Amino acid sequence: MDGSREGSRMVSLVLAGIAGVFAILQTTWFADWTLAGARPDFVLIVLTVSAHSTGVQRGQISGFVVGLLEDVLSIAPLGFYAVVRLFHSAVVGVTNGAVRVDSILTPMLLVGLATIIKQLAAAVFSTVIGADEIVLSMSTVVELGLNMVVAPVGFWALRPVIRRFSPRGGFS
Amino acid sequence: MTARRRTLLTTVALVLIGLISALVGGDVDRLRPDEAVRGVFAGIQQGFAAIGQTVGNTVRSVGELRRLRADFLEDLEQYERLEGTVESLERENDRLREQLGFAARTEEPALAAQIIARESATGFFASFTINRGERHGIEVDQAVIAFVGGEEGLVGRVESVAGGTAVIVPVFAPGSYVGARLERSRHVGLLQGSGTATDALTLQYVPRDARNEIRYGDLVVTSGLNSIFPSEIPIGRVLRVSAPSWDTSLVIEVEPVVDYSRLEYVFVLNADGRQPGRQ
Image (cartoon, rainbow over all chains, first blue to last red; front, top):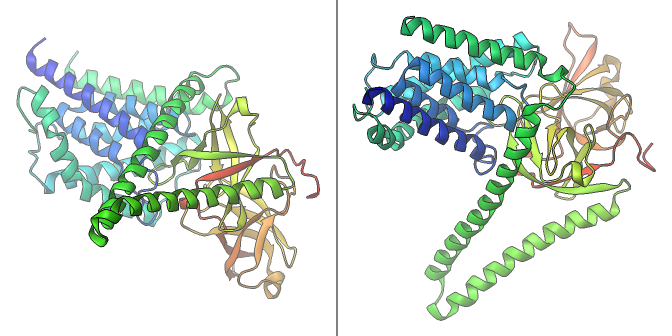
């Protein structure tokens, strides 16, 4: 196995671990950090960084695994978050090698795209399984804004992880 | 097999796994792996909550110390810091006394519990996790109430129970329906969650001719009819009443009496409709 694939695997493993920790933190430490009923989805931001850095295949697997963890942490049907996280990670994974990340704009756009895909996937999937739980409200829009604002910081903070394990030494 | 085809196959396989799991998960009547894993992670959540509380208190103490250093002389600094700590403890003591007082006053057997995790802001399935579970006698579908700022109010019901933790579905969850009654006019209806903790609840199926009997601020309580919730538990107050021309009943917006974003402690009622003095 060459260094590039090994590095990519390590990046996805480490970032999936970080996303898992954030999944727990979002229900405990950050549970009260809300603005107009919404808060940034840190798990989504980490998974977006992971998917953009490692591609569709590793991105969607990371998303699925972290989503499973969120399923057991919540009362969602087992598999709900797994599929939702899989979808937004897979879509962002397509940009691997095709979109070069700058400091501010690209992270915002990638995370914005991931947030929209998350909401759409959740709405469709909840209809398919008859969960009848997904409500699109003002909080959804606020969350989109918060995610996009936090995105550049998230990409900047996770850049050392990419540099440490990826032979390319950063975002493509 | 090309990389693209492998990726596509992985996507389809994982989606199918997730879909099948979500569709059949609720009907499987045996030990579910997710329940077992949830028990483990609930312990981790409890640990994080405890650490968070400690760190939060520490950060607050540091902030307080800085403020005191700027405001007072150096020789009073230590005294002021201790005074601040005492005040903090007194506030906590008052809060706990209030909760204890409520527990002593309430007519139903009620078990106090602390909220250790909540999933509502960005999560699609609103829920609270409390630090009491099966081993403390908590069962699924028990009613959960809170006592905040001198007012008692309905929080929700127990959705699932693990060894030392339980998950509560709040009344504001979109799939949550509660049989409710307007306390003054005695009209009954069905209260539906709005999906977010900050929005008003909606009381439906109250007949249109009841409009003149309903006033702003009227208390809405649980009806106890065909419900797991005991009767007469306050839920909220009437915020707005509308009578859409296409609807045969009123649509009443209800502001919850409990501020869900500030909840720290709740009480799990020994529900099942058995509440002496409240039938």
